[in-house]
Image (cartoon, rainbow, N blue to C red; front, side, top):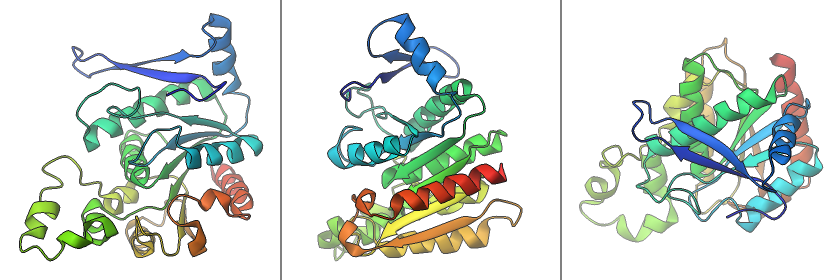
Length: 273
């Protein structure tokens, strides 16, 4: 689903390739000049934000568009895409490894285009697990982003499934752990953010609202505490910002102080590069 007046990134995967290569093209006005303008603008020194959305819907869900508008008004470039199996992307089986590969492909495409412009990743909900896993892989390959924003994150999918209100009715089942928790890695959905974050060689900002019914606030706190403990002291810092309960899972973008928090984080992150 394309957003009005904005280009869309189309990711094509070559299944016959030994590496299952990704080829990225731009759909927009439909002219080579437009593609050149778009790619050239990414290197104009303004921060570029690669946004990885959560599980429900598409990149065009209204609360996501609200965030894009805020970041654009702050004079940042914002790039969002849909993983395989979502929206107008390829209709294939979704797995952690698959969506992480998609995220890395878009990151590498942008890295080639941004030049010296800062490149940040912003994950929301499930996107926090995807972005952290992708950055772990990238950092182990020697690729370092400018920073990582984790909005409403969980520490790992096992605890998220265990504590999410959607599973409350099933928790009294005798085999709940076996049916729902022990098989997550088996089906390719472990999302162990609390392990991956130890390898992210970039500043990390965690944003979480109290009374988040989808990803409990305590899981964001757990992730922060774990990150402080497992990350080597040589890595950039991790910061946690708490928001009022009224913003819930999806609407931290409406917090009046969010733009200043982001500006300061981006400024400090760029200074540490």
